[in-house]
Structure formats: structure tokens, C-alpha cells
Length: 189
Image (cartoon, rainbow, N blue to C red; front, side, top):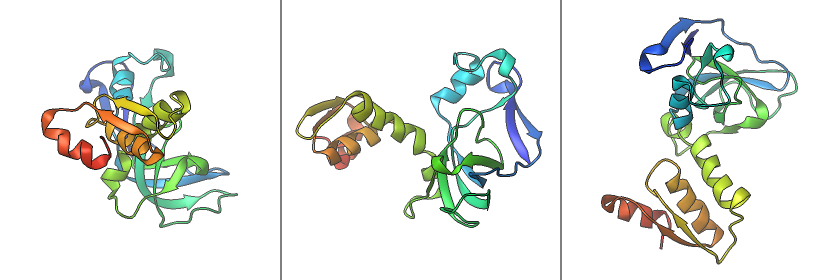
């Protein structure tokens, strides 16, 4: 299978397309045929050597946290998914999504929403989780509270606006002037 790896830190020129063996799902894992993968700030930070969790002695690595694709096979103990299911996932830190095939624990995988195509679905996990954690895990946002979301038309902001509005918060947001209608349509006051 084709995979995009880095063997050293640097600019985009350190990305290499390589042939690697296709992985097989272990117990509790799902093999995904990757149709789309996201590019997040964490990817360029790792590539440039500016992400403290990845050190030079851990190279080579495959970048890409989020994927969308089709289930190709399931490992023992997996009952929620079957071959042919369309799924998306945020991969654990020990594997990357810039590949043709990836295995992941079944608990980090979800069925792809029907109204999203593969590219849209692959853009959701990390950004949505970041918004969720900021609002609820760390921010403890509750119904009736007011929240200000900066960069509401960026990668994380649209999720934050929608989540906060669904919670019943009064949502204020900043965004570029041409994004006002979009941000208001997502639930900003």
C-alpha cells in the first residue's frame, strides 16, 4: 500500500510516498480503506518538529489523524461494523491516515453521516472534538450561559458555534465580515 511518511523533520519536501505492507486488523480493530484524510495544524507541527509528543527517535511516522473510508475487514470481537460500512475516525497517535489502508480500534470509529461525503467526514473528528472539549470538558458550558467564540468561521469555530447553540447557550462570535451569514446560520446571536 502507499503511505506518506516522514523520516526527518522539515518542510513539505520531507514527505515521502512509500510502499508499506497492508495492515491486518487485530482483536477489537477495524481495517479501513481510506478514501479521505484531513490535514490539521498538528500535522505540519509534527512534520516541522514543533510538536513535543513526537521526537526524532520516533521517526519515521505517518501523519494524519482523521480519516473517512470503507470498512474492509474487522478483527475478532468487533460486532458494530462489517465490511462495506462507511465510517470516519480520529486515529490514535500511534498510526496515521495518509495511507491507503489503516487499522483502528473499533471504539474510535463511527458510521459516516449519510449527508457528508468522504472528504467532509474526514474533516470532522479532530476539529469537532477540539470544540467539544473546549466548550464542555474544560469550559463546562451550560444552558443559558453566554459564550464568545473567536474565529467562528475557521476549522473549529463552526463546530463550537453549533454545539453551544444546541446546548442552549447565548452564542457570540467573531469572524471575517463575509462569514457573518454563515456563522449566524450556525446559531450565533
